[in-house]
Image 1 (cartoon, rainbow, N blue to C red):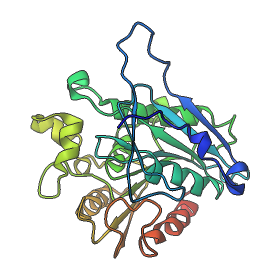
Image 2 (tube, rainbow, N blue to C red):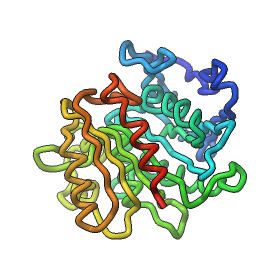
Image 3 (cartoon, rainbow, N blue to C red):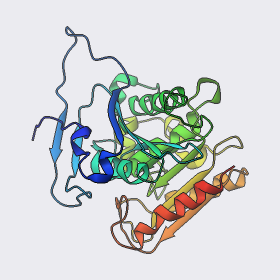
Length: 300
């Protein structure tokens, strides 16, 4: 089903949201008029709604954007959070894993930038950097470059992602470089895809990201549990025991590899919530929000 994308600004209803500054910013110029045109699609899905009753999946993204939620009362430490929604690298689950988090954390003083990223296309990038990773790295750099304008601390720019968006955010932690402003200062992963090989691999995400027959070297490059090294930023993981979509071992294996290298890594395993719970499907899976804010407050 095709539909026109509803600008996130239209979601800013209610007293708390009206106090925020919300804008959608393109991360690259629009395609030239003579370029082949692809119509972005938005699917309105039933069930698993966010706090506003939406559960939209965005497909065929050609121009990546950041929807920025700037709080009326910024936190004293000036944190910012780029949010990468999941969707198995097949679509962008823009509401429950995107805008809902933007509203929630901006109401608590954190500037949040929800990333609508281009989906990977291995036929276009071949063995180069996937389009989704290009956009997420650009998002970190963009927000850091706006630190003075938005009253942010340029050394407290983090990234968060859920499911395949967790793989995207986690890979930005690995790929980002301080020299060009793309290295996040902290990484938060909700029920993330980490493993692209072995018994806990998420085959669907691997195929969408790397193609049907990637080389062993290419698979290893994006199997994040194999990419731990000493200079990575701190990581915070959240996973449910009853997650049948992405086993919790994805979080546990990467966290263990990070700790072995001396990188701070905290894993929060909740009893229930399944997969894709966003801000929380029940009280148990919703506990992560306070735990994350407490963890963030302890970072140097």
